Image 1 (cartoon, helix red, strand yellow):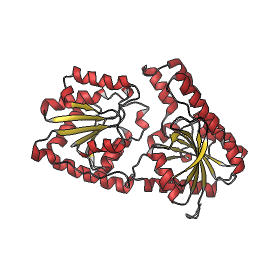
Image 2: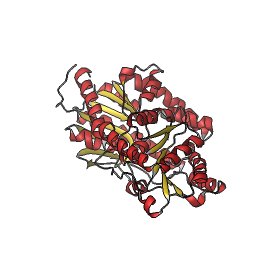
Image 3: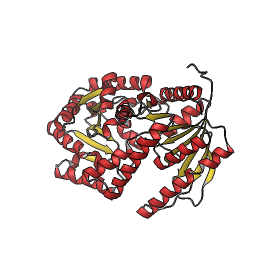
Image 4: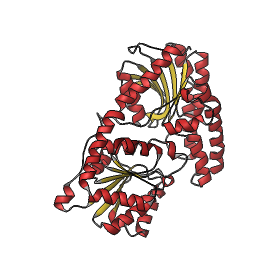
Length: 415
């Protein structure tokens, strides 16, 4: 059905992101790009910092209902904050009662609140949209099976309950669903959710925010160490020690290289594990682990990188993701070595901006060494990567995709 592209919609957005939101697929995609197209978004978010009571404020031209949050990270505090969040989201009933002109209720990655929003959508006759950015129930169950999560029994029960909510209620009875990748769409379709009821929205970047650095040729003229950079979480679950064992093989053939692991983990023992592993491998003299950095500080390390790496541990959970770091590397003009992960394979194949190898230490090391020895190739790959992002993976195009789907639903789906 055709629909007028100049129509505007009004959206009530409920997400686990704290206020102010920092994830780019929330902050930029909706808070900047969708709003800039004339659409109206009201947000239900919990405060990032501790506050005793909820309040209403403005952000990015939008109205935001900010919920209460307690201080501390103990399990009791976390349970209390979760309950505060759910209670805050129940406020959607009073918001909808006072403001009946919403076209959509959109819930991202919140299952209990999603159930509440589903009932609210039926009471107030609004279109209900669910956005799943990660297979959260499966992740809980996978971590229990791997033995990498605290309180396994609690999280086993949580995984099964969330799975039931997601696949028996939220996805089947929504008006539409947004998912992260085509692989995730395929996986969910196997559970009986029609493919046409889902739209894949992979990660992108904002070219207004992310700098283009290009290839760093300084080491060739002044003898500086070459630089291999990983940007991302250092959670033990992601098996980042794979990079250390890979880098050990790189150093055997090229001693004038340094590895930078840019990021951290909520569990300090994860970083300490990597430091001890680097010592065990006797490569700690050539490895820098920065811990958490502000985005622009992290990008300074990428600026000087000769090669960037994006290894993703092959698992049924991570295989349906859309890695942000790969897209950021490419936007900044850096050649990438990535493993044969569905989304990474697609992007590298289409862009020719890097080398895609099996998830094997020798293969990864060979890819890194090839780019270190062939800087002209790396430079060309970096340029192709930026061009690809400009054409296919920036948030202006992503916003157009999401806007078009919502306007189609507005025109064709009765409340």
